[in-house]
Length: 361
Image (cartoon, rainbow, N blue to C red):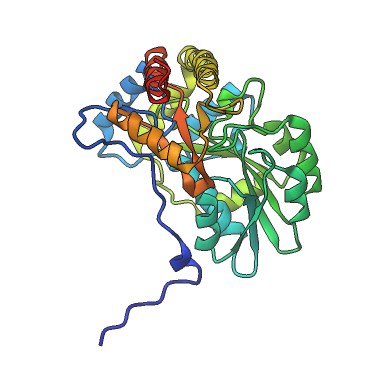
């Protein structure tokens, strides 16, 4: 009888992550609004940089990502030496758990938080702990109440996924002030660029050595296929992460594409403006149809129906119209659909399909 090696405790408690659907059987080229991707793609300058970098793919990439970190630092007014780059922000969120949590420790996050937070905790052998939310918003008091002497990491997505709601700066500051020095507060800013006036937590990082900010190139910058993210933290935290980061974690083409995307501010600002305009249209159109939704600070809207059956029926109707959105039962919202904010034409198409579903046409 053959026996298999036994995985570390917690690994077999992990349910595989399910990404947004990208295909509809019998439909060619569906409108994909299930993964919060940029409907306009990426910057033409980023595409050109990737093509040029591809000519040097036989060479190993930079190990310190110095050019990319300098570009990020210049745009955001940060210290380049306190920036680390990873394979999407997911890698950096994983490394934080690997480096700072383990058996006997706790990883805290909101009840409707990104499903990977639980996976990060279990992968490190730590215990995942959730704090209840209030009206689909992160509840700072509930998080503070659940901090114990075993809490080593607190993950918060702001704006939050899948709700799109965001914490005010005063609430974030109050939370940061209450987090013990031996615990890291990790502000996951995958959607930070879409929240007007929000710095992603950079100012809090500068005030608190135990606050970490992460960002991604997958959403606003349209580089989900390249997998690039970055984090900003105290030098001591960055030094730890660099010790466990793979030296060649980012490819030559990924580094080149991300640098060009970061420096093309005109493209980024246009995408932010278009998202804000179409988010207003989508939110208002849903409400006119009697479909509840909160004001979103991200590039998606959480549409809430009467119950799970109606949400499933709406999803099926959208699929029949060639439109893919995201079911979010796994996040605790069986009655809801998460809908990416697309182009003006995309939003018009979604609202028309839902109007037909509601019998409003």
